[in-house]
Image (tube, rainbow, N blue to C red; front, side, top):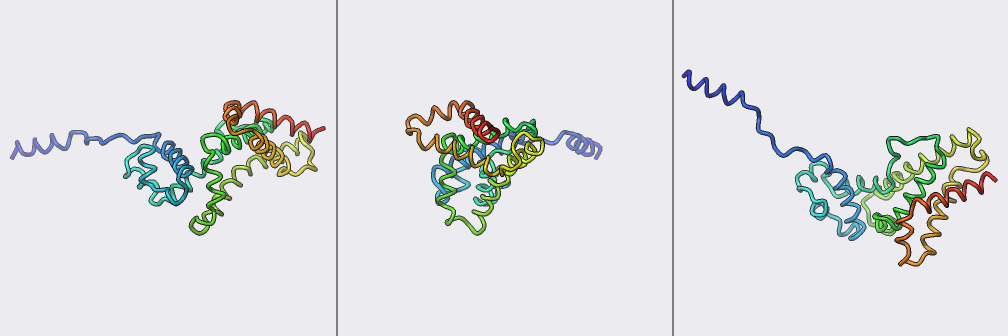
Length: 211
């Protein structure tokens, strides 16, 4: 009996065997893969299995986080326009506008270039309220920019009479115009120098509205 009790005590005192440690990078990989897959095959071909292979991650880990392909795609589309970084300075109007211009370049000719056209074209094929949710995501991202412009107007950095949306539209419109009017073979150069293009467009618009 003593031997048995000692055996049990020894077994229970051993540390529990640990499984494979959680991958802290899994969410970033999966959401990036989801955007890529959606851009390539659209809603009709978008499946969790296909994303799991692209990531690559185990299907179990993926399904635990996103039970349906709707859940996964919505989560991925939130990365279409990246949230402000942790060190974001809400008083830096120029920096905020440059960041927005860079994101527009990325959405049209960067790694996410195929995603936005899919969203616009396939809206009617989504589940109920899906398109409205996507629009809300995009508006929320640009809403931050609007808040920064309004605060800058309060400080006198830009004329208060100019609507924030007009400034946003001027920058986005100019960026899209540059992309559309540049031959396809040369658009990669715009993406490679996105900071320079974003700064140039932002400075042009700011100079125009403050002159």
